[in-house]
Image (tube, rainbow, N blue to C red; front, side, top):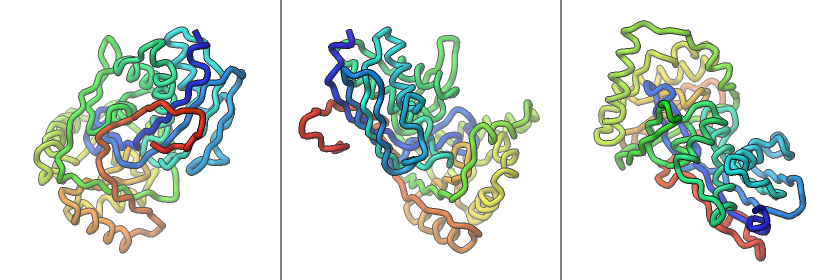
Length: 317
């Protein structure tokens, strides 16, 4: 069955994501217009060849231990198709270890590449894609928006992960501030308590419901809707400047939250002027260097298209 795959080449594009969004811990995620791009070719020569430019060049593995390669292999194994030789060329823009879903993007890139290579041989539907990505990532809050775009609500049930995709109000204007420092998701999660007070859980349930309404219908409610008592305060000691900037921005009336596990911070403006105001405040108050990224909400999620091996115009998506 591998013979039908050999010689195929596909182009994949996957957005960055910001999970949690304040109160929606491990549930809410937003796709953002910053992308990792990938070209994958199936060859009849065994083994893998990986070329990385942009973020992670010279740092990420370029052999079979590469996360994208592992995701391609997992997808092929899930449908019992032997893995062909692989030639990968990646151009990465999503910062690593900053709370913008870089590992989710790598996993989704590999799974989408497999979907494209297997098209016409085996079909991987959206449920299979989400299940594979969640199994590799460990939770669905980043992989769901990376796969499907927009605002996603993700949850687990007895059959595995599920999601609901929602369109975000056109007035919502995200800006991400990326520091030079990194923080591992594992460390961030280790700072979480095993249990929280009932009143804090109730508080977050109300704010999570309000946040969905704010993002979809009423952006003027974003400041109140992004309040959180479940995770950000517990993680503050690991990223003190992130915490200080978020407090400063919120005092100024801006809906600032930790992006994913951090240490990047996300401001959800209710109009474009708010994110310019946020950028000005961060420039004035930050102690270290923070890079502002004025981003849009990505509406497509991950895409894969066939790419002819001849006249390869790398990543001309």
